[in-house]
Image 1 (cartoon, rainbow, N blue to C red):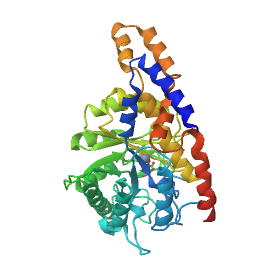
Image 2 (cartoon, rainbow, N blue to C red):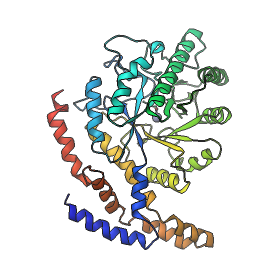
Image 3 (cartoon, rainbow, N blue to C red):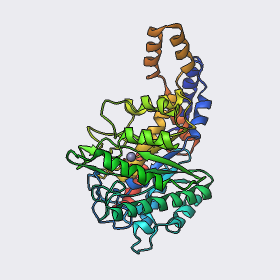
Image 4 (spheres, rainbow, N blue to C red):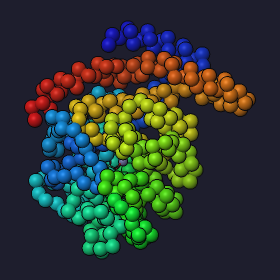
Length: 417
Ligand code: RNT
Ligand code: ZN
């Protein structure tokens, strides 16, 4: 993209926004301070390094067989580095426990420790990246339909031990990087058909969680992710939203809102202000559920835009961890990273450029036509000129220029796998 074109469009946009009382420079600065947590599992279809050719279980599914999937830790890191080089700003990487550096050995889930993530911690530091973490209860012979809620003590204790160890790993990451590591807990526990034991499994899950969280850590942000349903777990989910909401409020933990885990017409954006009045933080998993929890690449749709606006309007940017959660195996995976990350940033850019003071004045005066009119006008204000300038200032390709870069990497690297 030609520099002069970006600059002249930006100048015009700056004036236009100034007339509405919006400072575009301040918006760019704020956007630069927002780190998104990128999911390591988009690069390899949630395979991990325990058994990369094993089947993905737990009611989630990566569909597609686009060539070039990362097959080992080196390829995964290389793809992530490439993707991040095309995204402005400094970000985080969400790791799952199955992505440890196991050195070709079989390390059981109840044996994982910080030592298996040492090379990740060092790599992240070299790349100015911070890490977040997730325990992995799926894709394992002991996963079954119940893990932390399993009445069989042997199985339940196995998963408790796994998750306890994951928190210790997260603590080490958080301590070393000088920024709390968000440790997300999602389990697939549930059943395909109606259960007659709803209470029993939830009681077991509550007990498992209390044991998992018994130890206090200073560098971990404990987050728990609910879900409405999963494939093969359509009738009952032990860790439902109500269950975890009550658990988190009573135990001082953080709720994770995955945008694919609710009834399709439910607004996730609307939940943020309610949660933040009763818990210190919120964790987001931004995804694009197409008709179900499909985990498509996020796009600039109304749902994502509304979440971004709420974050800004609620003054919640410091209290919300923004992670992305998707895995599309049907398109270029590095390209999928770049589209998803830049999309969320574009939504945030628009939210940061909203003339919220004027909108609130209108609302205060009861001028509701005026509020609606300005909200509509905001949609076509020249936010993209500010976004382009933001990319240019941050030394990443402007606009669609990154497509060529992704194609080049595919030609030179991923297509040869
Ligand atoms: C599954 C949850 C969970 C996973 C990742 C891989 O429905 O959204 O967050 O996507 O842990
Ligand atoms: Zn999720």
